[in-house]
Image (cartoon, rainbow, N blue to C red):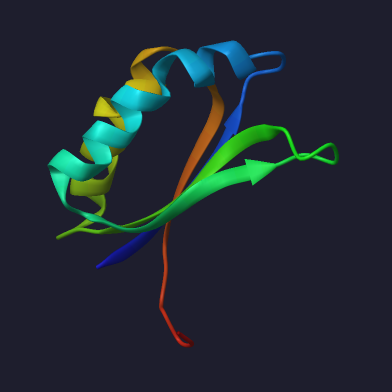
Length: 90
């Protein structure tokens, strides 16, 4: 099952993102369930959130992955949405 994780950073949290980026990228590599991922960008091209496409068994697995992401553990996100997603193009 593909799930889109759309997370918005808390205001003025860029340093939190930068401080935890290496751990977040290692987590992505270690877990092996991320199909695509990248930061959401603001008007000034600064990172303001994340889009992660997870390939997991179910929404419970997506919730577990999201809860254990180093970004989430560091309190980076204002909000996180997990939405089932269907790949059509690409």
